[in-house]
Each structure stands twice: as structure tokens, then as C-alpha cells.
Length: 231
Image 1 (spheres, one colour):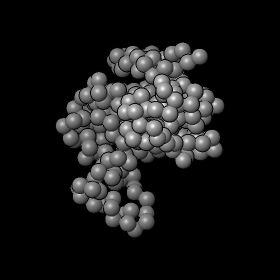
Image 2 (cartoon, rainbow, N blue to C red):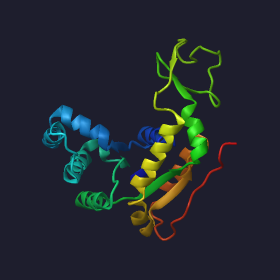
Image 3 (cartoon, rainbow, N blue to C red):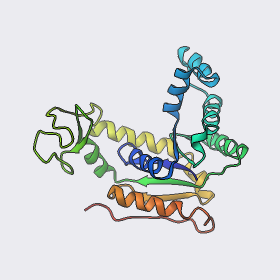
Image 4 (spheres, helix red, strand yellow):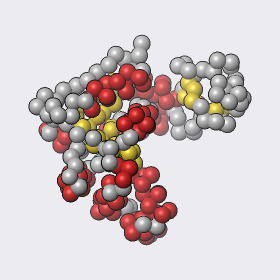
């Protein structure tokens, strides 16, 4: 199973990717994480990328594609992969098709977590974490049982990300739309795009994604999967 999981920051993409990794043994391929790992490990592709970045230039599509290919050849991708942050352009989409074809694989689904922008801003702006253990909380949706005390570790210090504000979230949404606009029509034409209500309870979102993955042989009837939004 090979999928692209799409969604703006705060949509729950990371949570759902982690579930797929834990429950299905899939590998999450985040280009940013892979790039840092390759540079640190000193792989051939990592050395190329390091030289480019040290020169103050952007890493080319060719290097990114080589990085993806290098990662796909590792044993932990045997049960399938979740592409995170790639592809972002039509050229990268073509490159991904070739990378998969060369390895006897194919893209099964492109799953987008749809969100309501106003509700997403509320979700992101209200979140905070325990400064000690990282347990997550929210001003409205998930407060500690005892005010000021972490449920998980009992610590009393909490923190918020400085970029979790309405203006930054709006900018992220605009960037997301700009990055996905070039590739969605490509995959929609192939009947691979499915959409899930990303504002629903995470368990329901996970169930909807599971239902989509169960339909990978049904290519003739592309459609939409939705789940009730949280009230």
C-alpha cells in the first residue's frame, strides 16, 4: 500500500500517519526528515544535498527524487509507505510514478484531510503541551483534569508554540493550497483522490482512512468518504 497523505498543519495528518505506521507497519516518508537523516548519515545523496545547502541553494528535484528512491529501497518500506510533503509539483509527481514503477510499485490513494479554516485556527491556536513530557492539551477541547497539572506526569509547567497564532495558521493554509493545487488535478484525473473530514474525531478519521485503504482494488468508482464533524 502506497499513499500520499495531504492536509494543512493542524489537520491531524501527523496523528493519522502515526496510526498507519503503528497499525499497518507502513513507513512514513517525510522529505524533510529524510534529508536531515541522509545528511547526518553521510549517504551519497546526503553528501550531494549537504553541498547544495551549504552553498545556500535549494535542493533540486533530482536530489529529492534520489533521496526518495534511496529510502524506498530500505526493508522497512515493504508493507507500504506514506508520502508526506512529496510530491509538491507536477514534475515531482511524474518522478514519483517512475520511482514506484522501477520498484514494481504503484500509488494506491491520495487522501486529503479536509478542514474548515476557521475551526482549524481555533484548534491550533488553543493547543499547548506539558513542558516536561510533551502531553498535548487544548484550551477548549482537552484541559487537564486538575487545572495546572499534567495528567500524564504531574508537572505544572506548560508551553505553547510561538507560531500557533491565527496569522501564522492563515499563512500556512495559503501555502498548503498553493503546494497542493498543482498535483491534485493530476491524481483526480486518475481517480486516486479521496477526501475525509479532518475536523472529525481522530478515531472516526482513522476509520474512514481505513475504509479507503480497503478499497484499493476499486479503481472504477472514485468518490468521497466523509465522517460527521465534531459538534
